[in-house]
Image 1 (cartoon, rainbow, N blue to C red):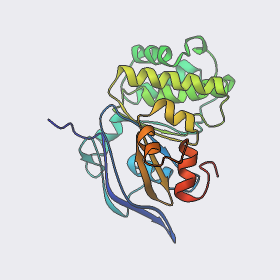
Image 2 (image 1 turned 30 degrees about the vertical axis):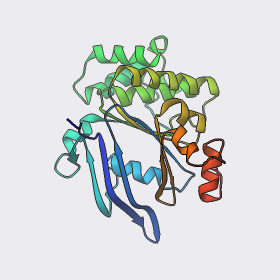
Image 3 (image 1 turned 180 degrees about the horizontal axis):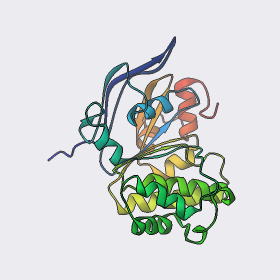
Image 4 (image 1 turned 90 degrees about the horizontal axis):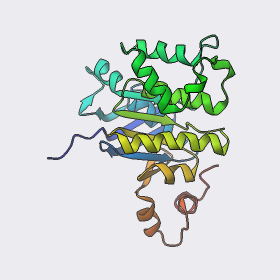
Length: 245
């Protein structure tokens, strides 16, 4: 029996005035699959993810999550999605624990789930720390914990480690590796870090100017372009510019 796709994007497009941000994109993500969405600023990554998470509506095409479109299923879909953005703002006079309790209350979840998330994110020792006093890495771990608090089936991460030092970045990676090992959650990760995509995701989607240029495993992508040594080489060969431009 073929499993229902976690995310199904079919012929989706989106324009803003004269800018065509997403052009007839097709994308399928299966349960348990971790997919990296790579491209420079302005490539259409964020617009595509915002449509998947229901913030933007496509001009054409269809998006289904767990077989359901957003129209008529918004309440159900909000319960199965976890979001973590590049920068998250917190109420500074709340502690880490109080912040988790606040978000858990939105899903009628109690103290037990908050304790699980503290352990999952390695923030047990920061339970009583005010969010304003957390380091950048700790703040991003808390953001990831908030995204996971409702036991989501789909996780959408928009550049979750941008601006973090290498140690803090690897702490986030370890949480995500454990999540991939222990659950069947599906994830879309947008990132500018090639190593991050290679470490965390089994499939890589390269997007530029609103179009998907290539997708596949790292090995298959490089095998299809034998002159390329890495993802940055491949992107340059496809577009004439670097991923970090």
